[in-house]
Length: 60
Image 1: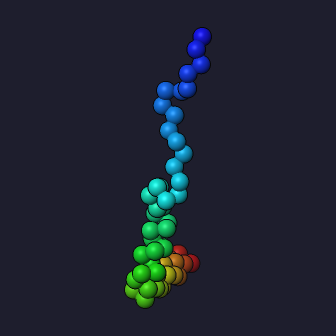
Image 2 (image 1 turned 90 degrees about the horizontal axis):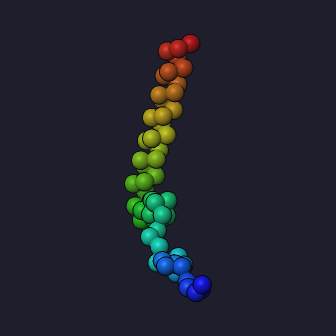
Image 3 (image 1 turned 90 degrees about the vertical axis):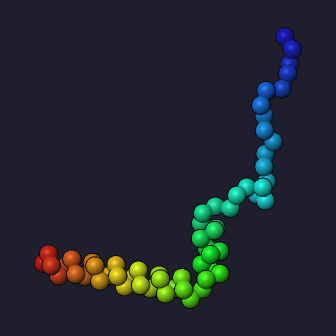
């Protein structure tokens, strides 16, 4: 029996070689766009709260 290495053993890649995660890309984009992202976040929050309050009022 001969002892040969496994046929397709890939070397470990470093963090710089990996593609950035979606979370990192989203955070980088949010920092880059600044006030526009905060404005959209505020609109989404107000809309969601309005929807929940409206549903609570209708279903009481």
